[in-house]
Length: 336
Image (tube, rainbow, N blue to C red; front, side, top):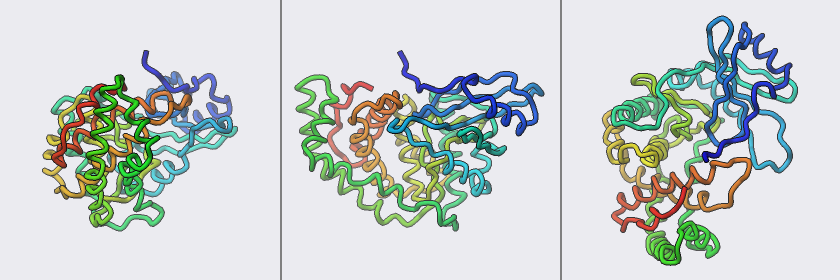
C-alpha cells in the first residue's frame, strides 16, 4: 500500500477560507480535488471554477506542537512576490494569498503538462535542457541578499560524521536485510568514506553561482512541451548550478530514468558543467541521504524516509562511478 500524507479534504477547510478563495478568484469553486505529493500534510487542491477556469490552492494551518512538520509557505510566497522575473516561465503564475482563520494559503496557476515519472528519454532530455536554461538565466547575476548563498554547503560532512560515529554507521548498515550484507556495507563505508569526504572539497570553493530551486523532484514538476514547470519554491537559494542539477539527475535515476551521465551530457549542451564541482555535489548529496534515509520514521511525514532511501540508491552509485570507487553493491538490498 502506498503511504500518503494526511491532507485535509476541501470540506475540512474552514468556510471562511473557502469563501475568501472564491472572492479572490472571482468565481465559485465547482470542484476541489486533493493533490498529493511532497512530504507534508499541507492542504493542496486543484480547483475547478464555475466559469471554466482553474487554479491551485496551497494552504497551511495550525498543527499540534511537536508534530514534526515545519511550514515554509512564507518563504515560498516571498519567492513568488520578489523573484518573478527570474522564475518565469518555469514557475506557475501567482494569483495572490490569503490569511484567514489561522490559515495561510497561496493561489497559483494550475499547471498543465506531463506528469513524470515515467521518465522516457525524450521527457528527461527536454526537462534537463529546460532546467539548464533556467540556471543559465541567472549565472553570475545579482540576486537579492535575502537568498542564502550557503545552503548547498549544508550537504557536506555527512560521510565524515557517519564514520566518526559508530551509532550513525550502525544505523546506516542496519538498512541491509542480512548480517552478510550489513558486514559488506560496513566495510564499503569505512573504506570509501574518506574519498567521498575529500571529494566534497571543491564545493567549498565554487565560484559560479545562480538561482537554485533546491528541491527539483518529480512531484514538484510538470513537463509542458519543452518547458520544465517547477512548483514548491520555499528553499530557493543561490549556489552553483551543479548542485541543483546533481540533485535532480540522481532523482531521475532513482525513478528509473536515464543514467545521470546521460543527463549530464544533455545539460552541458546548454550550460557547461564544472566536473569537480559536480562530483563534490554528488558526493555530498549521497552523504546527506545516507544520514537522513537511515533515521527513524516520522509518522506525520510517512513517505519521507522511503524517498530519501530511494535517492540514496540514485546518488551513491553515481558518486562511486565519478570517483572510480568499487560499486556499493550492498545498496541494492536496501528497501525503499
